[in-house]
Amino acid sequence: MADINFLKAPQPRDEAVAVIELLFFAYRDFVSDPDQVLADVGFGRAHHRVLHFVHRAPGMSVAELLDILKITKQSLARVLRQLVDGGYIEQRTGSADRRQRLLFTTDRGKDLIDRLIALQARRIETALEQFSADERRSIRAFLMAVTDESEHAHIADRLLPAQTSAAPGKET
Amino acid sequence: MADINFLKAPQPRDEAVAVIELLFFAYRDFVSDPDQVLADVGFGRAHHRVLHFVHRAPGMSVAELLDILKITKQSLARVLRQLVDGGYIEQRTGSADRRQRLLFTTDRGKDLIDRLIALQARRIETALEQFSADERRSIRAFLMAVTDESEHAHIADRLLPAQTSAAPGKET
DNA sequence: AAAATAAGTCAATATGGCTGACATAAATTT
DNA sequence: AAATTTATGTCAGCCATATTGACTTATTTT
Image (cartoon, rainbow over all chains, first blue to last red; front, side, top):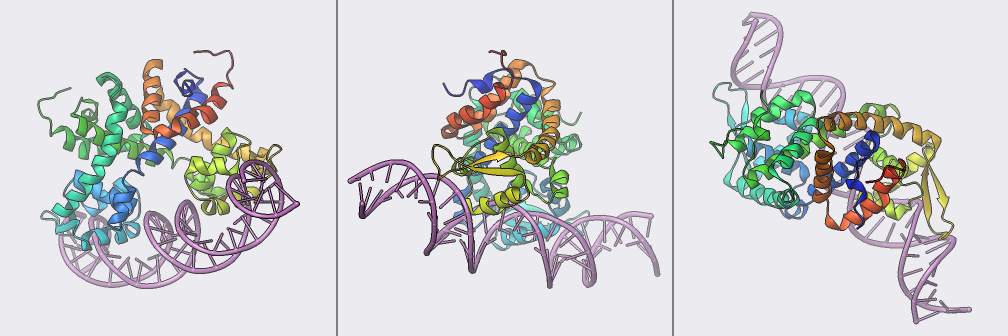
C-alpha cells in the first residue's frame, strides 16, 4: 500500500505539515466537483458560495454574507447582481430595518444549489462512511478548531442550527 | 456555549453539509495566515503554494508540480519566474532526462517557506492538541478520503514520506 | 438636525487562472 | 537516421475574482 505513511504518528511539526497538505488536496478536489454544473449555467465558484450560504441562512443581510465570505462588497456586487438578474436570488427590504436587503433563494436558486450540494455531499458522505459517530465528531471539532476562534459563535449560531433543527429531539 | 450543535450526530446529508461548511471556514482562515508575510515580499498565495511543494519534494519536475497544483503551465509560468528571478527557487537541468528542469528551493526560499509554514503549523498544531493519536489518525484519514482516490498514491509516495523520513527510528 | 449605518455604484487595478499557438531541445520510436 | 513524442518555455489575449478609494442614497440612531 502506498498510503501507509500518513497514518503513522509523526512528530508535531511533521504531522502539522501533513495536515496542511491534506487540507490543500481535500479542498482542491472537493470544491471542483460542482465546476461543470456551474459552467453550464455560466457561473463560477463565487456564485456557488453565495448561493450556498444564502440557501443555508435564508433572510441574511448583505453585511452578514460579506462577513461570512470575507470579501468586500464591491467583489460581491457583480456576483450577487448576476444571481439576482438570473432569478436565483431574491432581495427583500428588511421589515425591522428598511435599509437592509435580505437575501433569499428562489425556487430556481434552490434547484441549482441542491444539485451542487448533492455533488459535494456525496464526496463527503463517502469519506465519512468509514468513521464512527465519535470519530466524525472529532473530525467536525477539528475543522472548527482550525477556524478562527472569533468565528465559532457566528458559525454555530447562524449556520449549524439551521441543519440540526431539521432533526429535532436529538439532544447532545 | 454557542458551538454545541455541530457536535451532535446529525442525519447523513445534514452532517455532510456541516462538514462542507466547516471545510470552507477552516480553509478560508488557515490559508490567510501567511498573507501579511507574503505581501511584505510582494508575493501571493500562488507563490506560497509553489514554494511549499518545491520545498517539500526538492528536485521535482515542472510537470510534477503542475500535476499537484492542477493548473496550466501558463498559469505557473509567471509565478515560477518571479520565484526564480527573486532567488527563491533554483532550476537545474535533470541528469537522467536533460529536458527536465528540476526545482529546488534556495536558502532564501527555505527561509521564506519556513516562516510561512510556521504560521500555518501553529494553527494546525493548536487545533490537533485536543485529540488523541487515534483521533488524529482519523482526521488525516478523513482528509485523504475527501481527496480524489487517484491522487492517493501520489500524495503518499511523494509528499508524506519526505516528512516521516525526517524522523527516523520512529516506526509505526 | 446631525451622524452613523446598510447598501449600491463608478473607476482603476491586481492576481491568478484560462485557451490557443508556437518554439526549442532532448528523448523515444520507427 | 529520420520521424515523432515529450518537457519546457513563451507570446498574446482573455476572464473571473478580488482589491482600494471615492461617492450616493435611503434609513436609522443619536
